[in-house]
Length: 223
Image 1 (tube, one colour):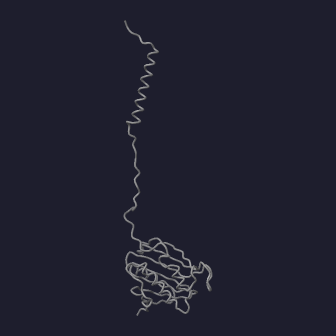
Image 2: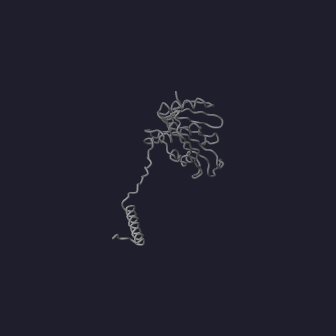
Image 3: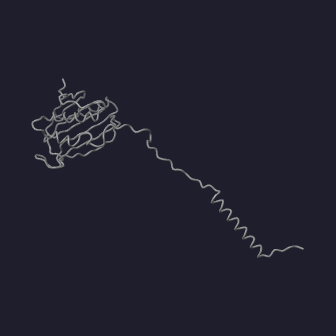
């Protein structure tokens, strides 16, 4: 005698099997199947190798403080300001760093208009002393005006004087310093050359490794 299964029982059995199957799959998905994860690589802090050591500060106040400019020019405290421009390397001439500074009147002082230019300072560092001297010679060779060579301690300088301004170009090892003094800016009866040398002496130890402040008397005309 063959047993028969009613359609109602068969449907119920299929429903139970489907429930068990889906529950088992959910359990495996929740606890048995590992979800792949991908870690994001950390960016390298020194792409392409370590960054070259910087010799020039990125703030002109650390090259030549406004208080030094005020004291040298006989200005009241708080009347001078400075603007810093950090240049880019120039591999074609071997220059690795450049910082330019413009000192102006930010306050009021007798004989000076607000915003008047006081001093321009340009500093550079090169791959070596030969590259610095070569570019220094190139720059001074195209300057117009009366030029003469001077020595500042162990550094070499060329002073260029023209009606509107006087410029001192200095090279010391791998570093160069250029200081410009407008003709309208004078310290009493002091010659522009003396003021420029004084300024250069203040800056050189901060841009040339291994140098120390030099006495003002270290500057003398080259023989």
